[in-house]
Amino acid sequence: MEKRTLFEIKALYRDDFRITGFSFGKGEKAACIVGSMRGNENQQLYCCSQLIRKLKALEEQGGIREGKEILVVPCVNPYSMNIKKRFWSIDNTDINRMFPGYSEGETTQRIAGGLFEAIQDYSYGIQFASFYMPGHFVPHIRVMKTGFEDVEAARKFGFPYVVLHTPRPFDTTTLNYNWQVWETKAFSVYTTTTEQVDKDSARHAVESVLSFLEKEGILDYHGFEGYVSKVVSTEEMVTVRTKTAGFLEGKVKAGEHVRRGELLACIVDCYEGTIIEEIHAPVEGTVLFAHAEARAYQNTAVYKLIPEKEDW
Amino acid sequence: MIQTVARAGLPVDELQEIRKMRIEPLRGGNGKRISIVTGIHGDELEGQYVCYRLSGYLKEHRECLRGMVDIYPALNPFGIDSITRGIPAFDLDMNRIFPGNTEGDMNEYLAAEIIRDIEGSDLVLDIHASNIFLTEVPQIRINELHQDRLVPYAKEANVDFIWVHGASTVLESTFAHSLNIRNTPTLVVEMGVGMRITKEYGEQLFAGIIHLMKLLDIWDGEDYPVRRPVISSGYDDVCFLNASSSGIFLKNRNHGAMLKKDDLIGTIVNPLSGEVIDEIKSPADGWLFTIREYPVVSEGSLMGRVLRKEVYDTGKGEEADHGKKDTV
Image (cartoon, rainbow over the protein chains, first blue to last red):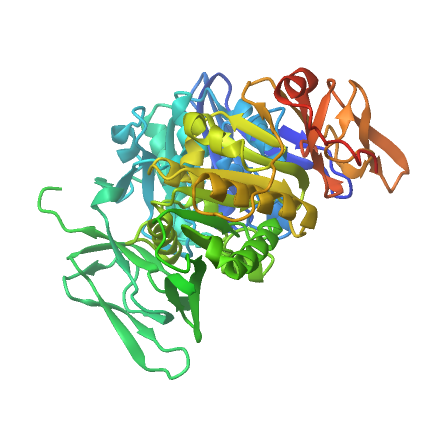
């Protein structure tokens, strides 16, 4: 294992800002794995820490294939993590909206640019990603439709689902999108949580990544076989929204199968404690995402369902 | 008359409402409409003064109105109320969610209702105030995709500068782009600095809006003379100045200053050691139309923008009055 600084900025009063990478094996740039990019992504950082631990042991046992190099970047934004701020400490910009970056630009453009220079040209790019809304996911792989996406490769992670996502304008400045534009096959790994560490989910995600690297001939590893993934596009998902605002009492969890008409959640009046809305499943299917805040606003997407299909 | 454009219920005893003031002619009217919009970013307050001036002035002179005026002072009321640039609780830049979605979450729904309400206006002005970090001379920024239609309006808006910039996919989710592609001409004004109100700039834009209303046949009262702006549309017209080190910025020149190449714009210092870490100098002869206002800087922070003198001279007429207060 080689630990090296990929990008650095001198600070006035804080320690220097550093992005640290851990590389395993020597040779062609086979795979790069990126962890937390925002200050609240504890689960994503934890996943990388466990991956580094496993890869270090594998390397010592000769488990990295000859001529292959793997790079792990556990944290892109230590400054924000250390002060518990989600975005960049001074101007609140999101590094994951700055790719491919610009070395002569503003601070977060420089960070994105410096990181991208160090992590492009890998055959595979894997990011432990988070969703902008608080909640729980069924672990899945997300692939952006850019024309360079590789769905068959995504299945090799062995997650229950591969989600195909059509990029919107603001997605064009994310790491995943730009990796693909520069011909790295990119995958976003969504585990169950963001701020809270879910060790079981993290272990599952690490096993999936190692299994993927083994199937792609980068590692020698015998572990997790995984699921036969179902591929679903974001357009096929059914979003269930609140019509009112109040306390959210969820009745089902991510991963549960629900029948059409089944009670998913209730909205409770914040003052009087009465149920003001019952939310029922509009279709039969599996809960991919369940919102997890105490209160919900009107029109909040509290569940995302993958409808049941006979022809999976 | 105050009207509600969109509303959404909140969990605890509150309703979020986006409101506008509609001012109509005393009798009839020609059906034309101008919309004045501000407050997408909660920390940009320069537009508040413009809305206040317009609303008060036009209500007093309704006899001079031939068309309608819609004034939207707060598209992001939570942000304005909590000194937050984005939408609080969602950590979301409101100017990246347009045109919205009536079936989407609360913010997407509100955005969609705003677009629905404003679409069809004969002209829209979306007033911004840079941010808390930079001070800007009054200017209008135009996506090159829409320059043919928008530059003629912008020339009459009494701003100092028109900056035609390149297209970018990420900007397709802005308020202005969403309206411009719906055939509703929308100008983006940037002036002053975040969290402050510069009355002088507010009066300048107020006069420009009255003049535009006159041209659009919405206003039949007194007209105001407008200044001729500098226009830049070349890729290399503008020099960007970025900090090479982190530190505290002390500025020597104000925005609007005319600079010679290598003129000192400011210094970056280290208060701990008492040293000057970096000197920010002008890379060319030109016009300083943006200057760093917030003193704490990181490596890469934007310190200013300079429009090259040759472009300034080409685009500027005799009535130039920039650079009067050009030193600190």
